[in-house]
Length: 352
Image 1 (cartoon, one colour):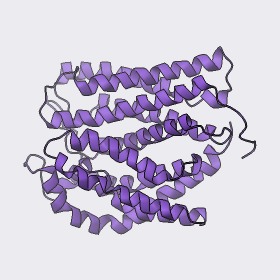
Image 2: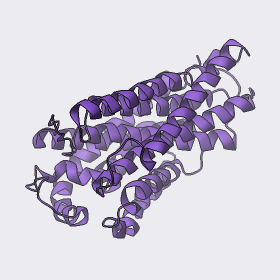
Image 3: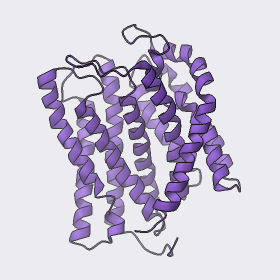
Image 4: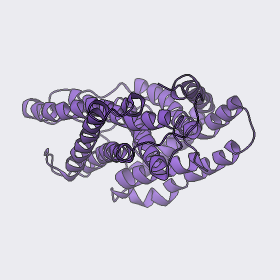
């Protein structure tokens, strides 16, 4: 780092990053709840509780993006402090457009399933909004001593970025995209290949960037606990048939606790990256339960039009999936951690 951490971030900007992170988490959390909502055969209208929370989050992110522009233009706050937060303006405008587009799509094409052009734009906006807060705070932490509020905002933003990234993969792998006019369901082999490659990478990548940029005592445990909490509430506890699995799902936190014990040791960055990938990568099938189970179902002989409970499906497929993906998951997790190391060294720790 090229300068001492003696600069104080303006309080209004700290609040801005915190609210932007909350907005991004509301968006992806309610987006997952919306999938659960539809699986319970709730009424198919635009004005549902998940949609209301989602677009509340959009308004929050949009407001913080506008705040960043105002602070930069009118109050001359340093560009490096507000540059990435301004991206929330772009993400929110994309989501606003996707809302109108989704309404138009429903009017002209009826029910659209999970994957559709409006939904792809919506999730892209989620990623941009989460990226604005997570990476913005990661860069700022190289020149500003993080406060408790900044650390909290970073946890929330990285959770949203992690979940949004997984959500984008789910969008193209889950077999829930047969609409009234279009069938966007993925080829079962494509779905398994994409999920098996992308999902083991994402978790180690997020944990490594977070642990290297934010001084928190147990970064893997904190970030993973945040992910488990939001995913557990919106996709497991929210569904009466899947809720009994919640106590078992929460046990995923033990993986992160084990990783933190490793990260505390005096090891090289490459060894820590290898261990992060080896510990987190192989367990994507349990960490991303329940939705990831359905990405593998058709390939494993369980067509989507044949009823089977998610818990039963997981129990039947888990041994086979783990047998196929455990070693590749370790390798791909290592790749994700190495990517994160390069990002933090060449980009996040570079003052701009």
